[in-house]
Length: 238
Image (cartoon, rainbow, N blue to C red; front, side, top):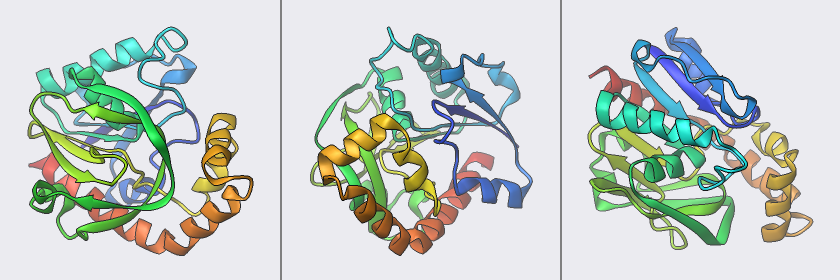
């Protein structure tokens, strides 16, 4: 299997999922879209992951590469029908690229929070072996407002009704982060836009609160990430 990863900022890489790729000997290439790296020929890849980033799906004037990225996502999911996984911005881009809509998340979800699997999510093979209520890291001020046609909502929270979804039989995405590592909060808080959002929601002491919450849950984050990764790879190979 050969994996392609779309990144939008250097610090939002596959995170903890990298150790499982290494364990399985999976070859993977990263395209750093914010650095204007070109999207390669999609036909040579077997799976696509789209990571998070500080920009919004509608910021096409400031980040014109979002336009070909969305086109590539449409081609991948609709035409090639190959396995897709989107996280945070990747979740929103999947919705936007396929005809759904995104809008402001009010209030922003930043912190260690819980999401609940829907009835469909409980039966979804991607979440096999995972708890009905999952503790996760959230860091977003945009949400999927209207899922694309054919989407099945797999998880929700009180403030955000589309926390995870499946589109067709080959594309999955999550608003929350499953790729958290011990240094994730520190790395992301170094990004001015992320730190500003963190302070706006959690106050000046928010960095300490979020770091502590992530540290207390990192073992569970890693276990959930491994389970979700294994489930995705099993589905992708099928």
